Length: 405
Image (cartoon, rainbow, N blue to C red):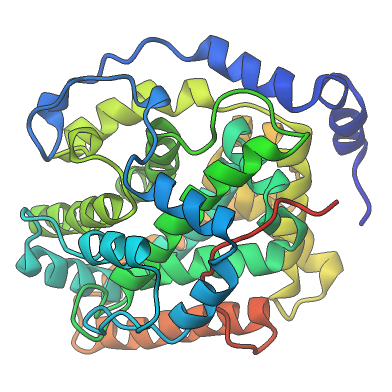
């Protein structure tokens, strides 16, 4: 893989010299005290404890015990065929894991099936935007979050990014599916499995010689990532002047609120409204962002993967993907990620995209257009997963090691 001069400087210069400890220390120094009020959460109340120092008190001891006992390979085998929200847990699971999963798979008392159904309808007509923003845009933001980039890079998934992105996409696509929280959907399943993965990484990564500092994937870290998905996506769609009805906006937030709960984020930290979400995002996202050598390398891999998914050929598609990533994430994030500027494609996408949005939105109200749009978007999702998994069945499983190199 050929790196640009900027990438080489980022890899071999100050960032490479100080490594993970320096990157995390710089981020920690920038983060202010927690001031977001729990009155703005779905719980409406809470202790107001800084989420930097809160992890997952339910999942963490269970995952640690599974790893310490050597149970994870058998658990992964048993959970392989656990696929649907209403499906009973398989027989043979360790008792502590079964008890945890039975609790963890329950929707919160405040979940509203009507809003979840409305969110599915919203995804039907807005899938193109959401896939771009949650996939490419959110991906570019995540690699510019030092703690997240380092967690991904030095955990098992960092050694095989195609597999890592495929498993991340499985959860993302599950949230956007029409039956996400219906009995035969799989969002509950994939969220609970992801929660266990996070707990396993918390146990494993501090054992890596490359990891310094606090236990990874705190409640704040999960909130930061959460804001690179629904909050970022909603802000960009409003910026693009995508017409969104108030009920659609509320429903889209709700599906991600429920997902946050299932991923183990405490209700006292989950924003109740978009105003609360924007206020929380403004507090936690900017100070947690910046460049790292690992983030630059991960960005390069992600954009190469995106380019290879096209049929345009690398010479055309990689510069186009660079420009698309820069347009979605913005210049500052793109510079942190080491994405080169493209003198032809950057202005072309900046000019063409608003026109495309206007054209698309002019068609959306017409009969059958949302259904056709959904079919096209679903075909794109299936193609992406097929490419990333090389046509092999892939599911979220619990890791047993860190990055082996």
